[in-house]
Image (cartoon, rainbow, N blue to C red; front, side, top):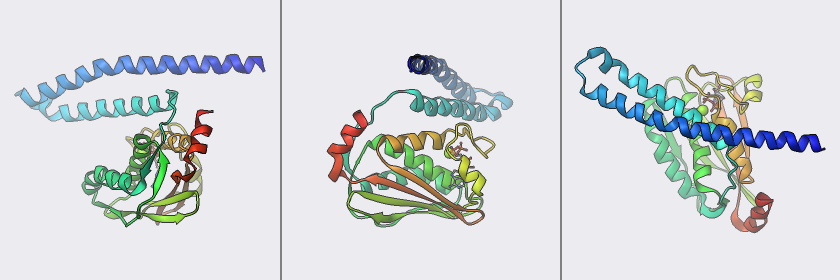
Length: 237
Ligand code: ADP
Ligand code: MG
């Protein structure tokens, strides 16, 4: 019993150190990024001009890994409030639509109706963006992400996020959300691990249904704000 406590304490310290280091690494990275951007846009050197966007892209990717990692290790109690789920979805669709159109993917939101959910808005948005981006990246040529109301019960609303992309095998489905699991050349394999945690922390549920070469449907279940007091207690405990 005692041994376990000590081990968990050590883990917490390791997490805090990792967060501190990540924070320190970010500052010089920001300087480097700014410098590359400046040099790339002012130089007459063709090679530097040509390659600077790639350098910036790689720096941004490194930064993304740190961000995803930090949101895992930082002990961060979600701030739950009552918010209309449709408003959040409209925002998230407008954030992801440009990324979709680069990939010839339409991000389409069907009418949801007004439902107050009990959630942490920035965290829910981050999770939704991760899910939708994965859907866009799963579509090879052109396609659609359909977002719609799947089910409403007394206490929960379930939103479906459906893509007609490449889908997953059963084996691939089992691995989704494991740290560093990715099938993409430039993936981090952290997006879904973070998303599962964020959704769990707000007492939500995430379910994946997928068929190879057909597509994937993500079912996101979130608590309606009718039982918010009870949920707030559960999370703080
Ligand atoms: P990353 O996007 O960096 O690869 P994620 O954790 O977001 O990491 O996703 C892990 C893996 O799960 C992806 O590489 C992909 O293989 C699979 N995946 C996630 N969402 C979908 C989807 N909608 N369709 C097909 N595969 C998916
Ligand atoms: Mg991803």
